[in-house]
Length: 376
Image 1: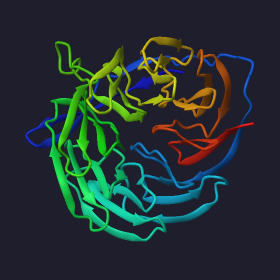
Image 2 (image 1 turned 30 degrees about the vertical axis):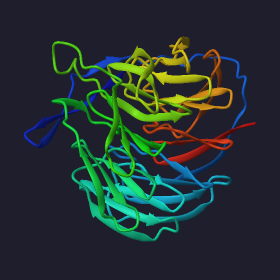
Image 3 (image 1 turned 180 degrees about the vertical axis):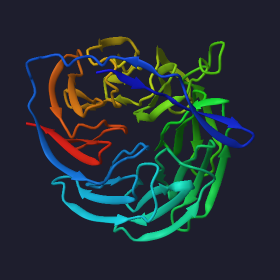
Image 4 (image 1 turned 45 degrees about the horizontal axis):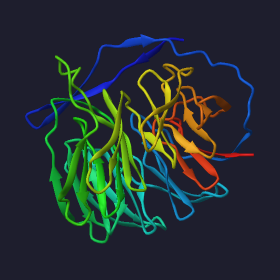
């Protein structure tokens, strides 16, 4: 089967944002290799929340519950232990990004940048208009909701009132990926990936810039060659924050100072995964890579899933799990990258980042199924 890879880009023109696409290139997805399964995987539960449409949706887990959303405006709360639906509501708008939540608040973003804030029982607290369309999942913490809109505005809203507390405006490069670049809150800061390859740390209470570092440096003779956007969601573990970039690097930085601990050239439009020993990333050719967390040394590389349009990887027990374009979930050894197990889902790709909650690894498929797997 031929796979058509089409990267969507946006061009900033006098305050307007227009979208275009690169020339289509065709690559043949690698055939699935046969192997002897060395891990027994079971499906713990599956719940349908609705199709993702043209957007990227990832679930979020808080206090033993999983929240999910879909393009048609569904918002759902699920018990992570048994998959039981606690409640499901209709937001009343098409949604464009995944769910942000903490122990008290659940937020989603609708068409044209409408931000909706709910209590954890599903009661709407307030809604407010942000500056433009939002593709990145909002994050919640410290009494604030942080939103990055496609015009590269990062804004904080008060959880109780919906009033905007601060705003940071960043200049857009002339050409950038139309993607769901993520954020993460830790250490009284919010770490934000940006078009142009920058990772910034902002103080949570005021939005002032603590530091700014480069994950990707724009290079090349053409604007297309110079696209170097942060991809996926930055990951904080211990004293490090790690991030990846399209036509850039996978890198880890000191969480306090932004000083790069290490960086390795790797192009990806997906996020990465980090555990106590390794950093895992999928490159733009479909190879899964393992790096030493402390040193950045390449530990292994598995290229047997080339051009299968892989999801972001996730570290899960002794394995690294990654989904492909027809809904197979591949479990690779975190130690050496060899195949341990493979399971199927619903035949659709996983566009957002999978999450690990206790003994479950949870994927949201484009067809709208939230599926939890465990190890027997």
